[in-house]
Length: 266
Length: 288
Image (cartoon, rainbow over the protein chains, first blue to last red):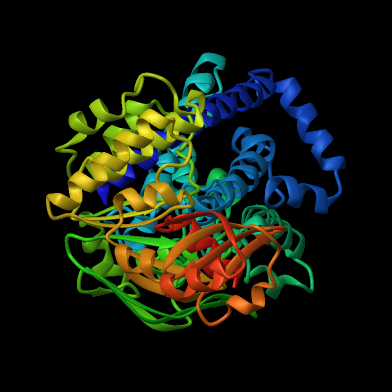
């Protein structure tokens, strides 16, 4: 199984490099935008105060009490690029781990290997998990590097590390939900629907904050990843981590179970 | 090595295969034939455990193909080639061969197979022609020296030289005690390799016999040019009329003396009697 996971990761190397590059550019722009000038930072704070609260929630995953470098980082980079777009991509990739054998006709080679379906899916999950770890390291390193170069000391610290570490179970949940949807949806729909679901989940979470629809927010996965709070206060809830980890295990287990008995007309 | 018992697959309302029963013995070359859409690939998918039968079962090397975990172990001993497949993109031939062989746990015969099917392994697979992709897939299916080969249209895309090499190789493998289950459209190739033949039509078996019995099943082929046209209905009972064009009649018969006596009454200009080819038997069975 590990041999297959290594092979599968070989196929994902280009994605790791591409995403690392894109994330680094966006991080560089974010850190550079914040910069060292206090005058400019006050201007940002004034500007964001003018924004409707819903817009702040949507783009910042909450409304920051004070707009510091960490909140600016979440608002400009982390919330939409890392949580939503990267999460959607990973859900897309997770669904692809099931349906690409059908869509790209690689199934005859992969499913005729001496690996059970469960092992095959687990190996692919592990290979995507390595991709997630690689992106975590790349994003952290880029943040620290550009923050050091541009003198934004607040971004070189524990909070940003915690933020990235907490993102790992969240991103793995995106992967395993993608895998689960890959086993139950028609192949042509599985990837786009999985990606769309991550966006919908995030929008539902942020838009329900502090409204009558608040209970709906607790049904979303991203509610258990309070990125703004972690980045600004450095607090991590064991419950949130537990919920995300349990959901990863459940989604992956169900995906493996269904995949084992699924007809693969390859 | 393979036993199919009442193997049936429906795709919703559509029939895939119905009540397929056969067994493939160790050291046998078993050809599975049928026109497009007859159910050949469906059968292969069920044997490999890619799909579950609607009813019935397939036992491959002693394991029920529905048991995925046990089938994983059995697949170590199977060399499988699909009719339609793709390689993962962006990799060179040698990377594909290396990775997949490592996952299979060996490629003891890779050199020998690559001598038979020479390939530029430093090229990316996207640059390969259809024939080269087929050769790489064959190398993947054969290089771990499996006991059972399940090959769906193995000669597709190969040039005549490679095709000839593959057929010789398969025959030699059978001589070495390996078992070959294969489907093909090219009946002359089947005739070269197969010990037994299973013909399927619309998802059902219409003939399952060893090659000599199948070839003699309809009798010999009799081509006759008569002096004057004949009402062929008069020949019923002693021969089966395969075709008639004017004074030329093609018949399948095994009671030659009665047939020739009947034809002689009408005057025969020319007559040819010979064994039927597999293609002629195939065409006759499918036109029925």
